[in-house]
Image (tube, rainbow, N blue to C red; front, side, top):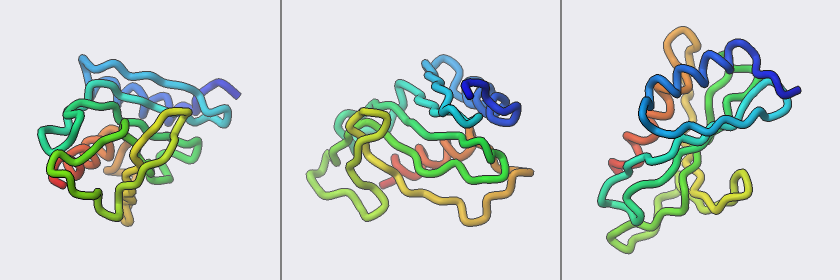
Length: 128
């Protein structure tokens, strides 16, 4: 299946609107969901490089399921320290990546959405 569910399509459009001006790549996952990659995400001077991409899957169960985990391009801490336990190096979508494990325990589809979750993950990462 290459067609996104209506909820996933709406989530993708909300991500595009929230991150207006940034390239957003969308690839159907074959089950009604999609893989989303947002380019040109600024993570600040705490990391090298200071600009990367952010990726995640919006699965077909959305909005009833959390958008988790998120990924960035490979990042190193500018202070030379190791990443904390919520960040690990992986391969995602055939790319070297950092997996950011930030599950939303109280995911509520009435107020939570893919764009807001992406913004929260970015905010968390830049504060590390």
